[in-house]
Amino acid sequence: MSRIKLEAKLKEAVDQLVEEKGYVSIIDILIKLDKLSQKDYESWRRGKVGYIERVVNWNLGQLNFLLKEFRSYCLKKGLSPSWTGYHSWGKGKKRLLQFSKSGNKDLEDAYATHYVRKNKVQ
Image: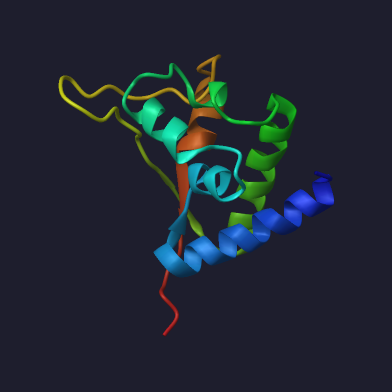
């Protein structure tokens, strides 16, 4: 998929999800673009997958581009960034989940940031 087509699909998905839920996350976008299956997402949340990038059906260059465009578009739309901790599901101690193989803090924060609509339009 070309970057121009990806940008268009990203914008459409962001707009739709914000309208439906009042916020959007990169995980929502990956699922909406069919780059992350619900099954793989749930396996990651249950701690069966070490990091989410492992099960995303895209290369790291494309993911990096998507993360940057996602943040940029959400800020242009006036959405407020809100860091959200993703913790494991299931029994036992809940642990903070990892998004990237490297565990780089900036990258982890980029994945964990949701963008929230400030005021619901009536």
